[in-house]
Image 1 (cartoon, protein in one colour):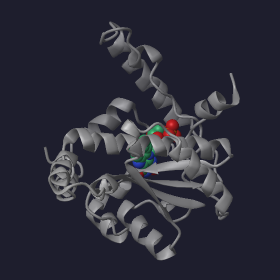
Image 2 (cartoon, helix red, strand yellow; image 1 turned 180 degrees about the vertical axis):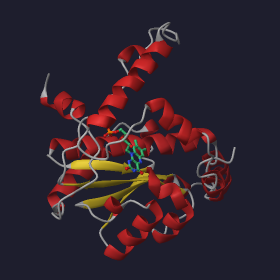
Image 3 (cartoon, rainbow, N blue to C red; image 1 turned 120 degrees about the horizontal axis):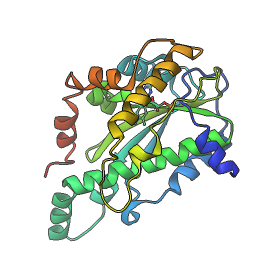
Length: 249
Ligand SMILES: Cc1cc2nc3c(=O)[nH]c(=O)nc-3n(C[C@H](O)[C@H](O)[C@H](O)COP(=O)(O)O)c2cc1C
C-alpha cells in the first residue's frame, strides 16, 4: 500500500470542521489538483466557485439545510460549464450549429462528469493534506436559487458543493459493498449470491449505525434506499437545466 491508496481508503465524509480557514496556498494546490483531472476531449467543462462571503454562505446553507455549508474552512461549488464553448468566436453558421450541439444529453454528461472528476481530485488532494470534505448535493434542494445567488449564466449549472476544512470529529469509516457486487468481469453478470450479499451488507451496516460514535440509529441500506426512492426528488432540476440550454435533446 502506498500513501495515495491509504488516503483514498481512509476516506469518510467530514461534517464538523474547526474554525481554521484554508490558506490561499492550500486552495491553490487543491484547485490545481482538480484541474489536472482527466477531462473529456480536453473540454474542461466546469467552473469551481470558492465561496468566502459569509452572507452567500448563509444563503447557501439555507438552501441545503446543513450547517456545515456555513461552518467550514472553505466552501466550493462545482459547476458543470459549457459556456466557454458557447463563447467561442466561430463563423455564424458554425456558431449556431455548435450551440445546438451543446444542448445534447451527451454534452450534458460530458460537463457533469468533468465537474465530478475535478471535484474528486480536489477531495483526494485535500484529504492528502489532512483536511476533510463533504460533498453537498443538498445545494440542489433549490437549484434555481443557488444559480441566482452565484449568478450563473446560461450553459452553467451548480452540480454540488463541497465543504472542506480541518476535521473536528472522527467519524468511523462507512462500509461499502463487497467487491463481488460491484465488479463484474467481461460482461454484466449479476453475482448469483448478490441478494445475499446485500442482506449481509444490511446486517453489517445495521451494526455500523448502532455502534458508531455519533448519530446512532437503527437503519440498513435497503431501508435507506426505500425511504429515498419512494418519494420523487428535486423534480425542478430537469426543467431548470433545460432552461440553462443544457440537456434539451
Ligand atoms: C454527489 C454527492 C452528494 C452528496 N451530498 C451530500 C449532502 O448534501 N450532505 C451530506 O451530508 N452528505 C452528502 N454526501 C456524502 C454522502 O452521504 C457520503 O459520501 C456517503 O454517505 C458515504 O459516506 P462516506 O463519504 O463517509 O464514506 C454526498 C456525496 C456525494 C458523492
